Length: 445
Ligand SMILES: Cc1ncc(COP(=O)(O)O)c(C=O)c1O
Image (cartoon, rainbow, N blue to C red; front, side, top):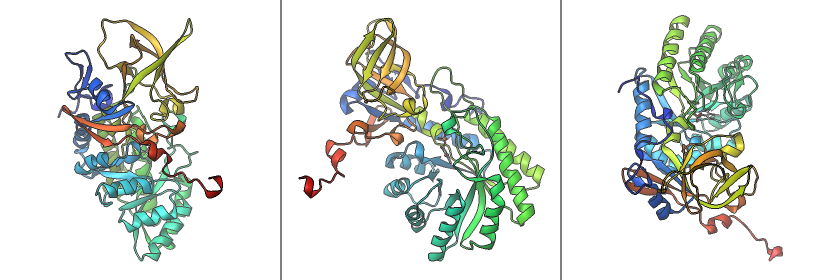
């Protein structure tokens, strides 16, 4: 593969998106109007061809450094079938909850290539992870160090860990998803690592520290931050080596690679990022006289987002003359909370055929009872009418995984398409499931 080529995160639409002879949008040889009719809307769709392409790009870009371990940050999108696709590609996983671990086990995936992240793992979660053979924990704080050591001791095992540190790197991304700076709820500040090292080496004998972990943010468009992050991690490895006489031979640089949500987004290619990261690893290992470490990367969004899109049906419209025309969808913030949570932007288009072109600027409103439930503000659509099918691009990450039952909405189904085939990989929630955990106590009957 040509390493100058654009990579999937730089395209707005999945592979093979076009209008077919009927005039309908078609992706991977699947007519989107037919998908909407067959599975009803709202509907999440993942294109397996695009997904496989992204997987191959990542593998290809990082093959220049044999010691790379790609672990999919499953918080971006976790379902049993999606997990299977990554496991079949020999990827590991970054998990942050017992639920994600349970999903892996449900898919028949063992935890040998799994790291457990998070700033407040419960005792139940840590115990469950250990009992099921998790590879390592990325330990976030002193409390976790103590508890994890207790659990490992009670089971008479030595548990491998990394220490999550905050490298003090700021990226120009949304404040809520900026985690690498000093004032962060995640990880050990660099001024705390010596105390953590002291405890691990002298007191917590059931923990074995093999590496350092950091994550500097999400939807990152800069490349230099990764170069700098690797530098900070390796400088810390060198400092620890000098002070404590142990050489940590694993670093984890987290995820964060940006994708194209709108025409104005311009993320770097996976190759650019990979080349710079590896250049930094080599440069800093030479500079600090360190052996080349195992390099963990844990991308989430950039592995799944561009392969996903959502289908909705347009219902009511409201034209406030001279102000705004609202076009309402049969979904919204319950299936995609990102626009209302952090003003995320999306591109969309009408999927069904239209006679001629009559574009107008409208605002796509969700159906949920919040004024802030606006999916896309001020978008040009071709004559949007009630009954039209709308396709919103790049909803593969942080939509299903962040979805809710707000307004007692049933979570939509998810379909995996591949070259003309389509299969349900997550069923639409039933009304029975909406109330299945409700208990009507006797005195209310
Ligand atoms: C520790 C860690 N690793 C990886 C990721 C994945 O980030 P992204 O989906 O932006 O690649 C996140 C996201 O928040 C994270 O917190």
